[in-house]
Image (cartoon, rainbow over all chains, first blue to last red; front, side, top):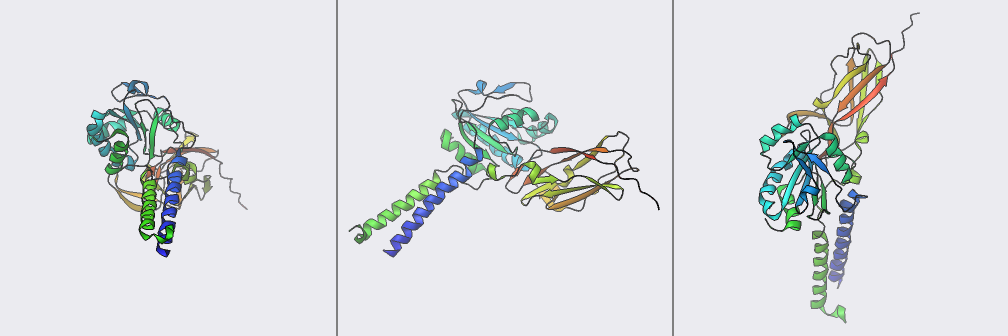
Length: 174
Length: 161
């Protein structure tokens, strides 16, 4: 009997703790941001325009990064792998750098980046803030579904496993 | 009656545990991530105090909040006006060694950082000074380079008895 009560109390505390953790770590961090992805239009390093409208029908992972951000660069190889593995499921990653082209171009070559990259500090920063990141901290990623709704927002670098988990949750297996 | 059925209450306990586990598993961002609300704005994380004249040099001080750090090599100071004002190289204290996969061996600062910038001669007018710096949080995020412009009053003329 006593054992049962202990287990039951533990389970309830764990459940409430889980719910609280979810509320604390996910929902409030993006308070005030809409579920509909705000429109964005960015110019890639090779002069093409990439916008939310042009990517309609794709899963879009918009990754805000920079050359001065070590956690951002830790994440890039995982993004490159994900673009290869999930392209067949409709994933299109876009790397929006808060940086200058001359700083980003060598990194594109170094990491073999296989998705569009933009390097316009002001435009990328404005887009990032429109997606709810008013602290300006990087890395910051937003997963947008094929209908243009925000599926998830992630502040901080993702490990390969975390990125895989995110994509599996929403796109299914690669 | 229910409490007298060990098999059932064990099953219920298991169900509660499964429910608790499910609550955890359904939280996609439950991994320990920096919460946006918990992050300080850059101006609070790296608080540059008013620049002062002291002993023939500009004195700069930052209050770096706990859990945040500035990169030594990303601190810059330059005079905007008057043009002729010559600032010499900034003098920074030894920092904390920090090895980064991407940036190599660098130095960082935590807590209170004090630096000085000697000048060529003593300015007779107020100086406009631009200070740039960049840092990160231990939580695994970095802030964009920040630029602050301050006006520093000219030092009072020394009077001789």
